[in-house]
Image 1: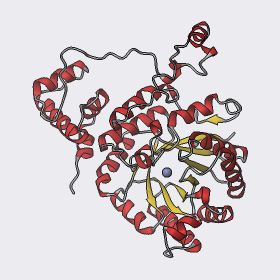
Image 2: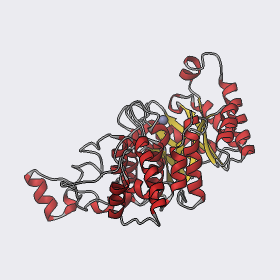
Image 3: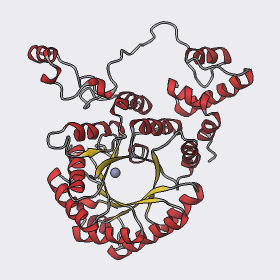
Image 4: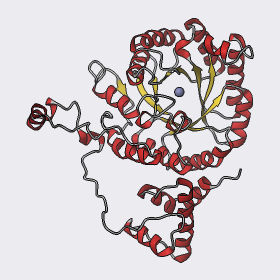
Length: 410
Ligand SMILES: [Zn+2]
């Protein structure tokens, strides 16, 4: 039976969004969380962008060391050969990537403005796929940007050309969030029947249907006998109204009527990592989790009105579709209200040792402690907010990789 896998794009679509920033250390922590959560692939950045180079190479080193594994780390580039050349020059060990190009009449006419037409789009995409394979790419997804507004016959022609050139998947991008569950199901079904290779479903939330559309698109893939790869972002961040929210997508596949039992989610998914992953990402982004966010919001398991509270207390299934424990919730959060020693870019050795001792991390000698302190200072310069436990542990465990991540030379 075919399965539904998750390709998370928080570190690409998420961070390219207006007003949304993650430091390279925070992006690394997000990759680590996505790996723990069991995501199949993290689109971890832009290999043709100079300030990403050290971060991308350092994360591939973490993969080699067995820390960021089995998750796949994939780069996003335009489907033009110059991007492919540059990507492999900057990040030689890149193994997985997605090549993107617009395919809709709207974008061909009003974005490319005569520079590219239907035929030259296919030509550029094919040349890029072939070059990427020559450069050592093991898997390639080809993105049809604005696929939902693309003539279906052309989309099929484009996708078959990508398959023939060696692409492993087609990314169906509902770039503007224009699809409905009904339209995406029909369109993806026709596409899957025609091309017979796995399809990525990439949905935006402009009409509030990103999660529903993702599930409907994935259903079409499975119904036609191909694997589906849903693109998500943690906490539903992403361009404009956001991408499909990662946890909501997983909840929908696991618990929605007519989907649960019938459609299989990648068995590596560990929903109980959701709470810590979403809380960390919210802190890193500086964006609070909405009170009503599915599974994770403060109200997701809260009951107040008489009938609801009474019902939930009698039997949780009266008013709860799934259990808070499944999402890793339920532990009380301890907030220190007395003296606190925090670590910042101007911290000294005593305060630093105190913080690490609380984490039960010991250093060999003063030399090692001083080295880690220096890195923790840089991490603070980098993040511009107090470091959290996972970040402190990461720096102490992998100091050389941390150093690489903090290094940028414009
Ligand atoms: Zn997008």
